[in-house]
Length: 323
Ligand code: MLT
Image (cartoon, rainbow, N blue to C red; front, side, top):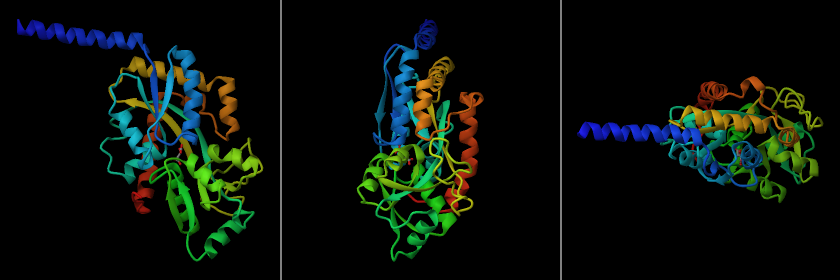
């Protein structure tokens, strides 16, 4: 008798699990953005959420859960029910670097299911307009000549801007004094206001302010110029070799999310990325669209693992500590 009751219960759970996948989504989906509103992660997530809503037929909202280099927001998503209604938005910082910087209470690979690899962008070295430099060479000379390190805004330890700053320090031999924010949106506001000296920022965050002349750009961390901002030289063209970094983003769901739900979320994100209006908006921010053959969950999983293998030794060797 007892056995029969258990069998019936298991049957009900299995049935409702399948039904949930079939009906998905039957209520709004939340994308957790682990950085402040107004920054590059927030901007990309909002553009995609708006278009994914059309495909999924349900509201897709973004929630900014900030702090600790994005690791708090990712943790919130990891520990949510694996039902597809909570999506973790992140990037090379949150879903790769943070595993080497923090003692996380989750595993970035084992506890998450990849959904889609999102557009990438190079980092850009930018300063407040009051810095007396007009080229990367001038900037390096100014940074070296200072009695105390210049201040560099970041989105916290382990964020993209922090890892890029440390990489820049390693390549140039220059020391920076990091100022952590809850995202590079607020850091950029302080750069414009002259409160901090530099940011090694995601291009998509800074580019509009560079175009508006409110901050100054020196070089990008790529070996080819951006088609959306061809006037900005590559680091190598500007005299700095070995400063190459591409910051890609992605979406994940908690481990255990049914495959059919991952497939539906992936399809909605791919449809959004292939929408000409979305593409135009993202490309205009200096973002490079993900190649079509890389738009699978498997491609994101492979990229994340390859980047962990590449960056963790660099981060550990640089002895990056929590702020
Ligand atoms: C943000 O949205 O604030 C950024 O992705 C932060 C960063 O990692 O630099």
